[in-house]
Image (tube, rainbow, N blue to C red; front, side, top):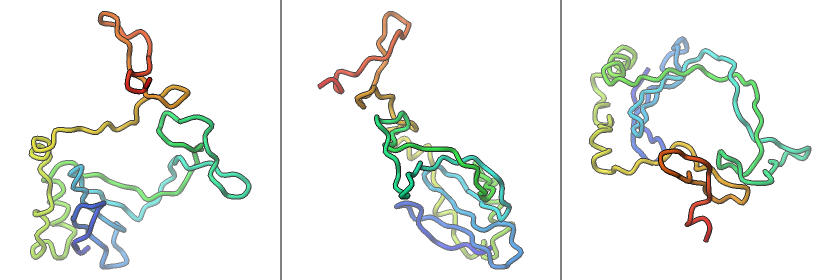
Length: 162
């Protein structure tokens, strides 16, 4: 595989691309936002994936009310053939993988792209939630109503009531 410079979203990063037909990976990409090296193999596996529901004309079916996932359309699960992926979370393992598989590992400065997540969190301590907030039937965000130490029910936030 050969190391090349690329972009992931708005971030400059690197990836490895195969240089021979017998390579076991179709792509290896470093994600600077999560500090993960992702290896996508040529091996295919069956996996359930959520896809939008479509009508007879091929148009996406809109949901009647906002969904908990934040999506405004209906979804269904479909069994699909997808490439198997491996995620390297440890920096040392990522480097070992790169040095083993990249033909140009000595010439290419891949270390410049590695992210120091602890340092990034100090500079920007705002953490975005992974899941959208719960909403009521009108799409207003819900927050727990507290009485003492127990949470008894969800109630629309004051900001959403406006």
